[in-house]
Figure (spheres, rainbow, N blue to C red):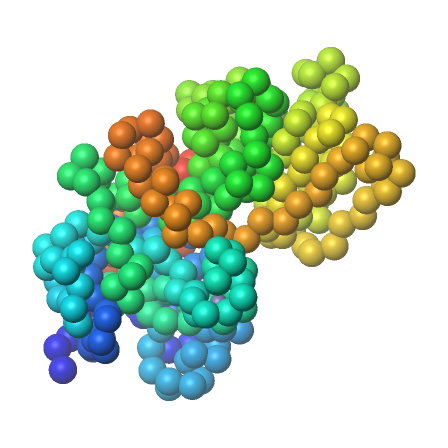
Length: 350
Ligand SMILES: [Zn+2]
């Protein structure tokens, strides 16, 4: 068996479980491809996976081996198993991170992001914190020379999540007002770029002046330091009492009430995360009187990811990259995300 370098762990825990080491290279079954990883973006999801997500615990217990994180992978095809004339060794590809079952009613109806048995690269199966990764051939999306591996790797989790939230679910339109919470984070910075592309007026929150300056550089029209002011009061003031049409919410319990209070009549709140807790209250009377819509959003589909690749290839959408680090420094990347010091994506280079 051939070995490769990877960041892998045998037990979940704090940052020190991440060890750069030799692990067996993946071996293919029919209709899979082997990809030489050129860039792998880091997500907050990786930190949850490293710490305590049950899917990883189950996988480690079941296989008794190592786990490799990493869901956002771009690279070159090194090997193809089975007949796949649409792909060739050496092709530059981005990997769609989800592996849906393809046969359940949700998958058949085009809602593969809702598939109950879907697997995620770097989660139920080994991911891209490694020299090589394997995936089903159908997960490969070819990318043009114009799109760098680093920019491509930023797209799958953060940009796909933000796209599905703002475009598919909330249907944000030109001329509308949108509030992006935590504009420096993965989903926040992606939301900023997408809202700008749409032509919305963007209100962005962050916790430091430095991040607010960067949010402005990347297209925010109004910035709010939520560590100093009540952001919902600031929104009401800035919109002359009206509120915003759409709120991109991914914080959860800590911001829920203020996010709802920031909505205009007919406003839509779209949520994809609960970093600060699962439970939030809502004033039902205010909700119906203002005709509010509260909606959930779960990642996105490969079709949407292909749209993002197309936009990134044309440079209509340029992912915000905070920095790249060598794969060996995955622990530093986790530290950056945990301390929320980054603005945009952190990508690992094997
Ligand atoms: Zn399915």
